[in-house]
Image 1 (cartoon, rainbow, N blue to C red):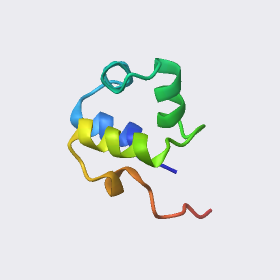
Image 2 (cartoon, rainbow, N blue to C red):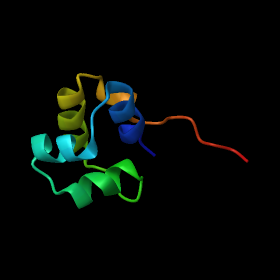
Image 3 (spheres, rainbow, N blue to C red):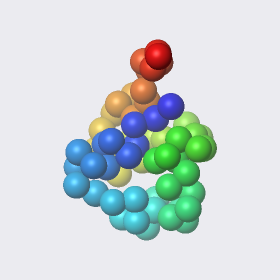
Amino acid sequence: MNRIKEVLDEKGLTQTWLSGNLGKSYNMVNSYAQNRRQPSLEVLFEIGKLLKVDPKELINSKLKTK
């Protein structure tokens, strides 16, 4: 699981902005943000660079329990 959508919201940025700066389609970025697909480590580090956060902050290390 990742926190890309949360970090975008915290920074007031959109998935459209990220897709344009990342060079990926909106659909791909939306898949990352909705946790339907996980970015490769290379892409995760690039997203971290664009959002000016440590890539570790983009990873949700706590598993949700019911």
